[in-house]
Length: 296
Ligand SMILES: C[S@@+](CC[C@H](N)C(=O)[O-])C[C@H]1O[C@@H](n2cnc3c(N)ncnc32)[C@H](O)[C@@H]1O
Image 1 (tube, rainbow, N blue to C red):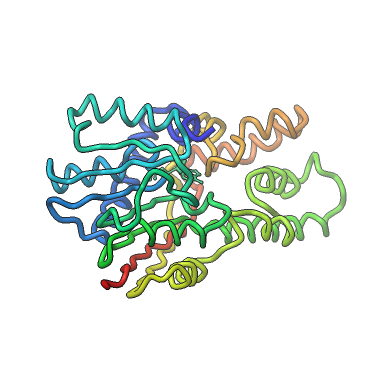
Image 2 (cartoon, rainbow, N blue to C red; image 1 turned 45 degrees about the vertical axis):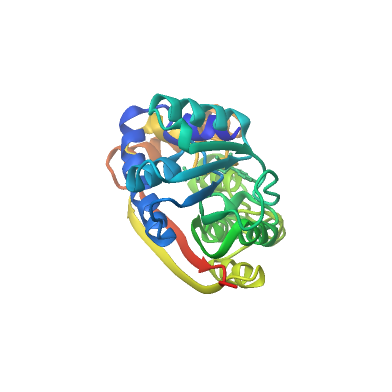
């Protein structure tokens, strides 16, 4: 699931959209690396390394003396990233470790100078356990730097849509809001109960600060970025073929499985001109957190 989303669904296998996304991701990765304050000779553990965005950028920044431990829960992604390291001829300074962020088996305590994550904690059910593991593997004086999406507001928006449509006449087929809610609630939890049960929505940026403090970190600094801007997606096919996070079905699958033919046509008639006319707007909310494992 993880490799399929990261390597295909995130950009709907569209090279132009992949390039646009990559430019945004690169900016975010560089911000995370600024927070990690890497120096030559250090060891970095990138947790939930995916296709190596942070680890490879770190090596490009610091050079051959940096050692990077790429960890991920997904074996296919680790194999993919290892193959990329070989292609770049940097495999000797890289290690690939399959484990969950909540239990970093294979990495000893006080072993690394910096820990990074980007868009990983969001999917981890026990975020406090993960923070404790980051603290355990860091050397005293080592730094944590993370960038995590805050998807709670997307869930609250889906929940507001649910309340709106509950007050509308029950004629789903010809009411755009009914269909919009069906789409959004397939991708984000839309009741308080579901929000509380969902690792992607049951925490806020402030909770990340608390998790870090509870794990023993000091000098915790969090910057919350909200970016409302024209959507990068301007093609109907890309919108159909992509999904906003790895646990969300693609719009195309939602339409195929949860809409009648008439509903699909009606929905497309309204939404498609908005997408192709570049009138779609997205909101991204990201918490950038840095913290220090206190020196002994
Ligand atoms: C949205 S991707 C981000 C990948 C990468 N950090 C980046 O910035 O491009 C989420 C990554 O977290 C990994 N992941 C998901 N759950 C995890 C867990 N419990 N422990 C460690 N990694 C996990 C996935 O396999 C995937 O590589």
